[in-house]
Amino acid sequence: MPPKIILLGISPTILTLLLLFFSEKGRIFIDSLDVAKLTLINTVRIPIEIILYVLFINGVIPELMTFEGSNFDILAGISAPLVYYGKRKGKLNSKTILIWNFVSLGLLINIVVNALFSAPSPFQKFAFDQPNIAILHFPFSFLPTFIVPVVLLGHLASIRKLIKIQ
View 1: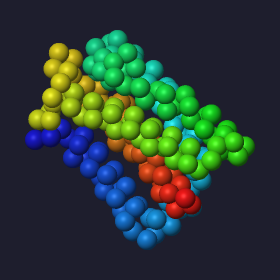
View 2: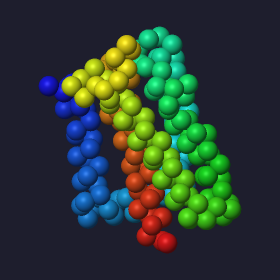
View 3: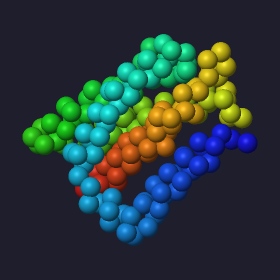
View 4: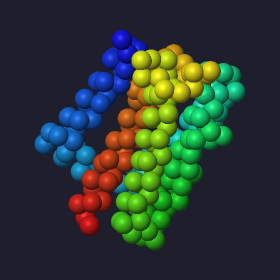
């Protein structure tokens, strides 16, 4: 059986995201969101990456989930205020912001895949010496059940809006 966090935490979140994008009211809500403000949401990635590094030092996640390993997600967080500023001042065009969203989404997918495949579960493929056990405990369980979905929603909503204006 998969861990309870997948059944009770992640699955309902994925269902909610699907309903938002595939229902008329959901799409109306998504289209009402401001791309610049959605960009700022990504600044949450900076403290999250620092927390992940501390969790690695304390032996509850593998190194590959940190910026010392193969997680470069912090770059999206660091660049988000610059993209926000460029959008607000009209210095960045929609195509540039769209590319930034795709690159940042790729960084997010990278860490999600690493986290999934390093968690102690039937899906575990690596990090057997130090599995990702932090996400199984409060408050770190909010990372896959709330923070990642909010960041994901921000990217998908921004990409939807930016493609519509191309």
